[in-house]
Length: 571
Image (tube, rainbow, N blue to C red; front, top):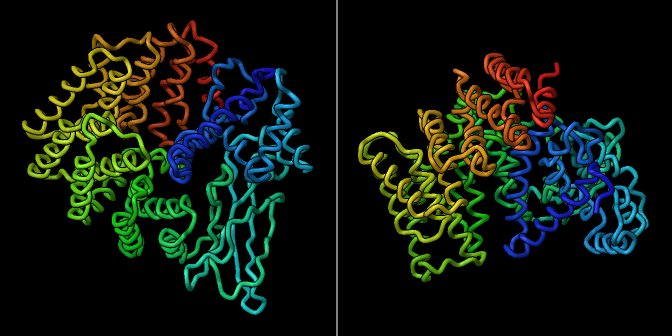
């Protein structure tokens, strides 16, 4: 067990890492699992790192320990454990684990005990690595490179920036691809970045190469080029098509999507080739051979709004939501016939395989469902005209009614929940919501999903709907999961939660105040929906800060919630 609460990440980080590896084995694709875990890390933990509640994986102080059951302690803690595995190799990591158990079985232990076992078992000094335990924030690694044709040598220069006074030990997994042929000429190699700036040399190369950086997301850092380069997007398109690392192939596509969304947001994509690169990558993903349907599904999925927001200095959630939606719709319209053909092909394959009520849980079947639901999302985002809305709602309703499994049914329900307009469209939406509720038959977990899909719906009156659901007989503030499924879920509906009138902030503040009297642990988590006020415009920030101040002025206020709001209000 842990010696004290400060060591919580030792237990939880290791547990999350073990779960990730086990799940990757079960999925028969560690790349798929890595994509899921990194997407979650960037969407939640990176935001935590950038906010007023930022803390190291091993906090050095707290008012309420309840506030440190966080994404940093759990998810980033798992990344720290993963870095041991990356630095020491599979066998070295196992040797370290064996020594750790041998030394400390039955004892109260610390993060330092774990680090010592890893180092001693492998005869290496990991004292520099220990800085990860005491450094908050997300480090940034910048890279630049050059190829010396005469010396046949490639030089890769890495620099690091972090909140640590001294350099961190950062494992950077790198592969090199020949620019002319696309062949991998240097297989994955782990570079140990130990200085503020280091240059690594690769000899014996017969031509210029392109680096595949941070393979498998080998460290929880932000990776950027040292200087903007006009060839960057061309390079990303190259990697999206040819990288031998599954995670990095996906990552290159995500960066292209991100670039196009931001260009759309700023209204300056007319003279760019980004759209061509994105359409090429999207079309290639849509027509992938083989049966790795999950990889295909993720390759077709745009970055989430929360991930995109982490790339912005000042976040405009409404504009970001529109820009992402515009890019999604443009891709859907461009490839409409291909998307529909693939959707129908998967539907037929799933029906002919005898899925029916016997839901298959093998990797292929899971991937088929995942891909088909991504395609359904694209088909249902085309709804500018009455005819398009009718066709989209009819398709989603057909899947909803014909599906036995929760995955397919819930995906269809999510599409329907965001549909509005003509009477026939609204009738399908409301009928599906009622049917899902009735079929839940009081099951708590299913009802949580019913509340959640309405809280995140893209409807102009969604806040009014959420307020009405607070009064629903199946809703209660005394049930943490039920409360989170509606109120906390609404805060993730960024474009509507951050509406310029500030009504979303007032609603959250009111609900948080009520919950604080019942469950301080939950209220402190709910209050975090307001603490990033510095990331938004002056107007939005002022409204969020006002809601926080009202919470801070409450008498009485729990220590859990006080720690969150007081930290965020510090200038």
